[in-house]
Image (cartoon, rainbow, N blue to C red; front, side, top):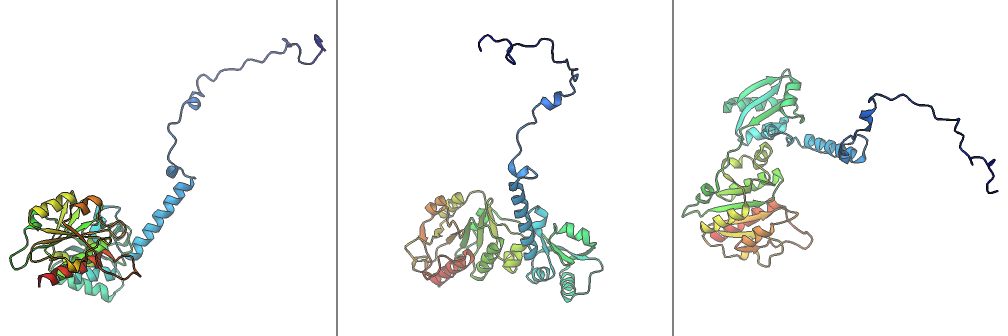
Length: 320
């Protein structure tokens, strides 16, 4: 009823006051301060994004150990071959080695004995290590008690590679656009040596480089085929054209077949791209012609190292 003062809560009881509390003296000030920006999802301990990232890193590490190839976590690991079969293959291929590293008190294995004998024949220093020290040297890759360090590869300038042709043997270059697999690089170098190519050209970014794994795949071909590293492939192609090269780009969508191209006896530069993306747009536009390789409709494309080998064989055939 309006005006009824007996209704509960209608009037404030001033006799019941909230007791005063003692201040903290600033001790709780830190709790009121901001804690900075929120960390990224992959940096939070319990976040699923961090768990996925760690799982992907573990899978990559297992794949590297399974293949025996050095991981790219450090520059030093790129110049190390680990594993009994891998080291022996590298020594037999003539890879320019600096030193052979053998685990102390390792079991007598014919491959290790053969590797040490080959190293002694070539005057390569042999060093003994403890197991942990050897594991640190190869950056955690499974080494089976033996590893081989090689010399860092010395790249040439493009000008030096452009002038390697002769009247009897016109220059034949292979330019790699976006080839990031080290094994493909090694296989292309091996084919280049077989077909008498005078050099390879690779970009300084987003490309495989001449590492120990590439040396092993090439079967020592890098000792016979020089490699030039350039900062920009489009500019390198323009320089090659100015030097008298006919630049042929391999493209699956091209109408003309490379076997029908009039390559003649002039210097030729073959440009190959990655299997997934092919040639870059600017690189393709700078080529003199684009040519394809005839294959069955059952397959969409060829491995880049196989395509490069077929193209080089086509040039050699046209010249003879």
